Length: 248
Image 1 (cartoon, rainbow, N blue to C red):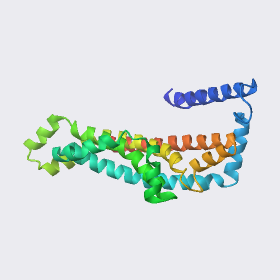
Image 2: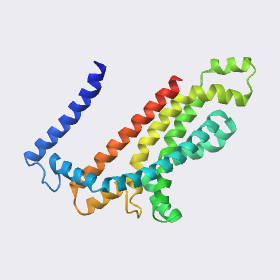
Image 3: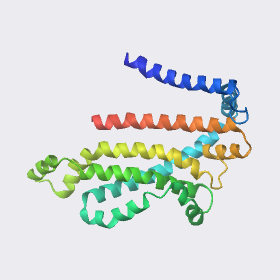
Image 4: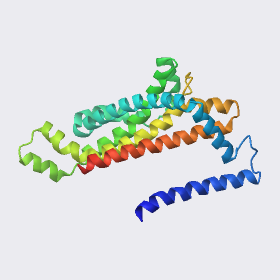
């Protein structure tokens, strides 16, 4: 029953969206240029795939995401552990990080260009910024709110502060850390679209912006579908890894 619902429900939801989409186009609520039919988008996607363009743009975006996400997660986890565990570091760093956190990714665009020029580097920087904050916040929360009974039990057994951090607090905080990493990875796919405004010639975000200029709405939708699909796939992979780690 569970396997049936896992397959059936997504089919029903996606099928319903496509059906509504087709009806909207058929009754003429939008012009074909503004809202292409599902079949037109499917043909564009097929050409995008067969011509090899799909793999060029996918790899360009994926390389930026992996690099930016790696550094964003690394800084987020390390600083989150330090801020969550040490009061002095919390007092020094947390106010600054909380002041930077509400700044939208788009607001960093001018500085990214000034600091790194055009190309991959400013895009990677934006992805680092976008992924850092949710990972940092969730790591701090997991470390700070480790159950007191676990900490006291370890201290009674003679655990040193560093052993307490490594063998008690971090394992207890792991669910929060993995949640932050999942959120950060999802935001990385959002950030890559913004980042590929910055003088790149390949990437899923690039084809969306480029197609918009030439009113190629079908190509814009194809780019959106690919980003949504890849974001879902990478999230499922990370969820599987997370379940294995937490089960262990």
